[in-house]
Structures are given as C-alpha cells and as structure tokens.
Length: 379
Ligand SMILES: Cc1cc2nc3c(=O)[nH]c(=O)nc-3n(C[C@H](O)[C@H](O)[C@H](O)COP(=O)(O)OP(=O)(O)OC[C@H]3O[C@@H](n4cnc5c(N)ncnc54)[C@H](O)[C@@H]3O)c2cc1C
Image (cartoon, rainbow, N blue to C red; front, side, top):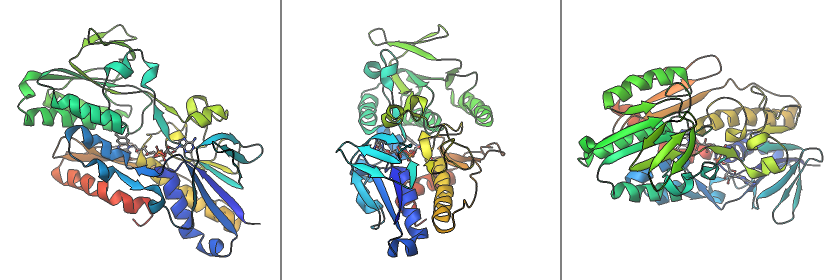
C-alpha cells in the first residue's frame, strides 16, 4: 500500500512542503509507494507580502497571484475542496464536497485569518492592508487623504510582525512625497509596553521613530472604535482621535482547526523542534497555525517547511526523523519607500537589526519576484 501524505492548506507552507517532498521522494513516487495530496480552498495562490505595496500603488495586483496548480509540482494531487473536519483518531479529513481523505502522515498548514469583527467598530471604521480588499480600500482612502491624524493601530496576535513597522515608515515617505508631511501626524499604537514584541527590534524602532517624527503609544489594547466621532479607545482607557485609521486586525487560526478541537483560537499545540502536533507522531504543523511563540511569518513557515520535508521523507524511507527546527526566521524590513534593513534570529540568537540601506530594499523587491521560484522549491 502506498503511504499517503495529506497536506491541508495550499498556501506558502503547504505548497513548499508538497513540492519539497516531490523532490526528495521522486523514486518512491515513481514506484507508487507514496502519494502527496494537497487540500486547498482556492484555485489561486497569493503572495501576501506583496500586499504591503498595494496601498501606495507600488505593485500590480496581478503580480500577487499565480494559478495554484502551476505552482505545484505536477506529481502533487491537488483538490480545491476546503477541509471541514480533521479527525486524528481515525486519521482522516472530511471536506466540503463530502469526501473523506485518509492519511498515514498529515500536515496542517491552514494559516491564520483576520478577525476585525472581534473589536467593535473595527470592520466599519478602520483600514487594513492584510487582505486584497482591505489594501484596495486603503489605497483609495490614501488617495483622498489631504492631511490630518493617522493612527497605525497594532493588535495581537498577527502575522508578519514587521509589517506594521514597514507600513508606518512607508506612510511617512508617501506623505512627504505628496507634500503632506508637515500637515500629518502619525501615531503608532502597540499592545505591550514597548514598540515590538521582540525587544531588540523595539529598541531599534524607538530612535528610528523619534528621528522620523512618528509618535507612539504603548500598552494600547484596542477596546473599541467610535466610527462617528473617529476615536479609537483602549482597555487602558486611552482615547486617540484620528482622521485615517490603519489597523492590523487581531488574527485567529482557521475555523477547521477550532471545529476539529485541534487548538483554541485555531492555533495547534506544536512541539517546537519536531513540529509535531503535541502528543502525536504522524501530524506535523507548519506556518502561522502553530502555537509556537515565534513570529508568524512566511520565512518562519519556509524554514519550518524545510525541516518537515526532511523529516517526512526520512520517515517514509527510513522510518526515523532526520533533524530539528532551530527556530530560524529571516525578514526583510522596509524602513521607507527606498530603504530597508533585515532581521534574522532563532531560538537561541536574538535579532539585531542593522542600519537601513537602499541595497536591502532592492533585495526585498527582488525577493518579491523570486518568491515564485522559492515556492516551487527552485531557490
Ligand atoms: C501584508 C503582509 C505582509 C507580509 N510580509 C511578510 C514578509 O515580509 N516576510 C514574511 O516572512 N512574511 C510576511 N507575511 C506573512 C506570510 O505571508 C505568512 O506568514 C505566510 O503566508 C504563512 O504561511 P502559511 O502557509 O502558514 O499560511 P498561508 O500562506 O496563509 O496559507 C494557508 C492556506 O490554508 C488555506 N486554508 C485555510 N483553511 C482551510 C481549509 N479548511 N481547507 C483548506 N485550506 C484551508 C488558506 O486558504 C490558505 O491558502 C506577510 C503577510 C501579510 C498579510
């Protein structure tokens, strides 16, 4: 009997794992000893980091998308048929069409989703760039903006921990380019007592914000937004007036994870080195959906995926795990329209952001195009 590897979620993590397994298990696939199946909920694959540029009109929307089938190795069996129930006791996954998929090894890669509806007034009163519809609306709002108070409001948990910093720096440059720099005040709010979850990044950000004239307020846990009065309020009883509100909405994991009792809030309890769902030996978890307290980022998902590819192919061919995930994350950080820096860190080494440069900004722009090679496993 062929060993069945089933991957739920055809985003960044699911795609990289499926393609990587095809590369490593070529002989077994040819001999029909293994099958690799991806269950997704979309024909299209979106490059989410590209959304950062949409509000400023700096990317063509069509460059954010590829046909998911074309990104996957042709040996991958791909179904667009959302998973509705995952049952790890019977080793099976039910889908919307009524199909039941059995597996020998399961990979959960269902990502995260935005929940602006969990904060009163957020869905109606705030703009965000974390999905295409939101990013388009934010672009329109910016086009009609002629000065005033902008609040960049960060809520947790959320993916890409550096994107709120990037949008703030880019907003400053965008407004200056439009001659609105002197007429605009930007205030950044963050839920804990510093400007970023990672302390070294917070320490780096504060002087950069001071230099750029960006105001900030920490310990700001969003309670509600008064859309009529244009006021955002926090649990800590602070009120800030705005003319334009940009928010990073709180995130939850996928509904199917909660519906299947696999983790509160949709976050799956995951062993941080093996990336196995805690208490199992055949369910791997990758990307945003893990509950590991590290950045929910594409690069995290990518480095985790590389570990899972090695371990799964080793389990199939030799019956043992190959290696451990060390917590590696690498992120480019736009610090304006024409400059950037980067951070890398792992479980033992903290991040150490360097001085911004135009070169790193160009690297980020280049990676935005190279992503498609990376997702196919060619880079
Ligand atoms: C604006 C923005 C900027 C970003 N910038 C960066 C950056 O600069 N660097 C970086 O490293 N990361 C960045 N990220 C984060 C990065 O995109 C995510 O962390 C990454 O996509 C996570 O990969 P994933 O596979 O876990 O989730 P996703 O890529 O979101 O994939 C999850 C997939 O599962 C599918 N799914 C969910 N439920 C089901 C179901 N029931 N059945 C079937 N399929 C399902 C979803 O539709 C989706 O296709 C950014 C994100 C945003 C929004």
